[in-house]
Amino acid sequence: MSERTLAIIKPDAVKKKVTGKIIQRIEDEGFRISRMEMIRPTRGLAEGFYAVHKSKPFYSSLTEFMSSGEIVVLLLERDGAIAHWRSVMGATDPAVAAPGTIRRAFGFSIERNAVHGSDGPDTAAWEIDYFFKNK
Image 1 (tube, helix red, strand yellow):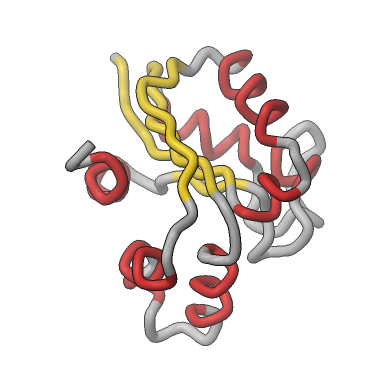
Image 2: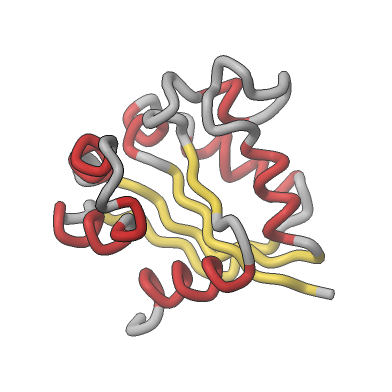
């Protein structure tokens, strides 16, 4: 059954000019990219997106980083999209991510780890709506 998830190519990956490689990987993994947009998020947009982490010590640096440059937001579709995209991304920390994963190949640190992906169906629906509702 086809499922939808949100993916973000983060500022570190855009700055390293690996966006095309990541998009190619997404397509090679059988995802359909139904929406895609490059944006420069404001600090407020990043704070709203990561509001669930507001009480955590990394919130400020994360929102500062996510508003530091352009990102690419993608709406991905395929059977088992959420779990498959999370597998393709790899662990949050690139140093322990499995070989062949995007974060292992292109990530720098836990925060600057190249990509984001929704962690479940409810989160995916909220995240997709956050970026694409009024488009």
